[in-house]
Length: 410
Image (cartoon, rainbow, N blue to C red; front, side):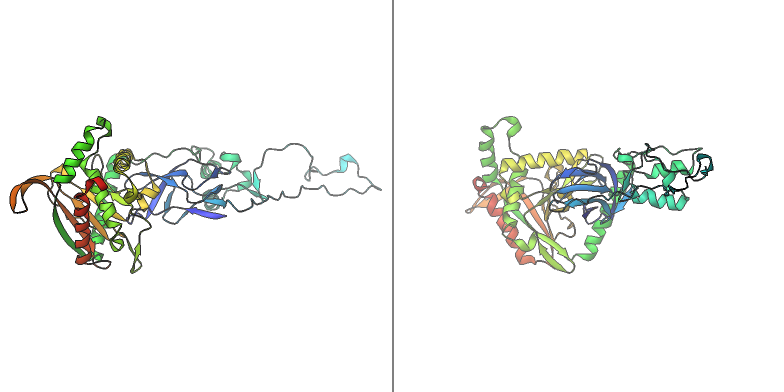
């Protein structure tokens, strides 16, 4: 058996509230399956499991706030044998001497002889009642004998509500079904919590990370001309946006700059397992979230475009997955659609770099000694001086420029 714990869904997360389970004890799961939904300060996140196996006990109940690393459930590994429950020995009546049988009337009524008839169902595991840890703690606090409590959970499991009901029968607490949904916090509360979390994380970033900043202006003439020609042959819904070119250029450029694609953890740099671009998404009503576009350097422009649309839609609907929140190796933010010319971003720890793009503007631009007007975008880099320096950062911006000058290769 292994523990399935509350994952860290960002450097600013300390705990999460379990909203609902999508599985029950005994369900077989495989790596990547969605098993639960957790509410963080930013959004509702669907939690994936990272091993094959069978769900054991659901430790946390919906509505419980669980710290990062806290146990949510137990999982029996795919190669493990299921424990065989040992049934408790059946009670045996005291032997009655054959030579001198006692008359029926002499049997004391205060010591009934067990009879092999059906009694009220008692759900037990290895000789013990099926009780959640939370319900057991509540029972100890309220001095409730669990043997007298009727369980309303799955397979007769005793829940916290059952214990509270037994402790106060005159005013029973409403039963809470373990698989039932918990109400998310009001929108105003979520916005406040999100703003506080973002502020705390950015303050930590500026306090702990020695930032350096670089910027470069990139001529997008060739890229936008190629994009225009490519879109002529596409249906309107399948057309590519310039942002797909920018994301692809960053992903392919940073694939050759591993010191800018990873994390600063415990005083050292840890390279990312792939190029997982954190795509900054503004949420309706305010706030920002940056889920991962996995292995972006291996995706075609169509796959990047489809992936970004999917991420934006699910981010704004509160349906992101845990791997998308914990995996980004470098973040890209594009504020060009907001009319911003220049973005000096703040690194999202434990990442070590952030790339920003401003608006595409027509500006005077000299080519081969001839002055003309070209569409220009300003690209910026915020780097962590502990993991890289300005030389490496400059090479990354140059590589991004090179990618955008050869759009047909993206």
